Length: 145
Image (cartoon, rainbow, N blue to C red; front, top):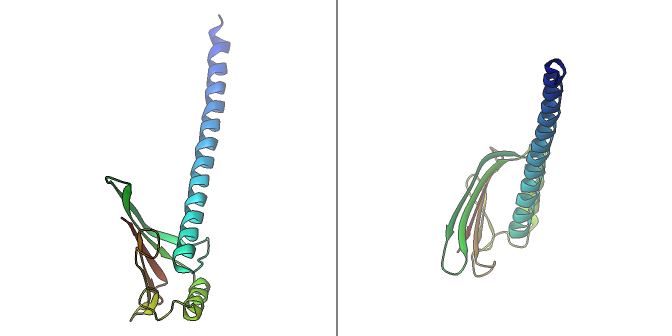
């Protein structure tokens, strides 16, 4: 066996393998990020009726899971910042919605809007959304009991 040809071949193969692992990791991370954003958009749209842009800034994302006797209980909190144009369309959608002004829907607050949904109405989930229109921050809290 000739050592002068063996080691360069091994190094080339390791570099190819390293590139393949890096590409797979990047694709996996990209897919997870896109899927997470789409899932949050859908959950927010279904529970509150508002649509946010795909290009939001995520400031906080927390999920606390606690197993219980019959099913799993969890608490989810997500804080995001949206663009000015997106905040304008969200404000118009809230003001035009049927649930604006009701006790279990959208209400005005001193900083923007708040949304409350009781668990009896929405599959055992308590949804609370706070929108600060001046800072364009949306705080989404979901509790499943």
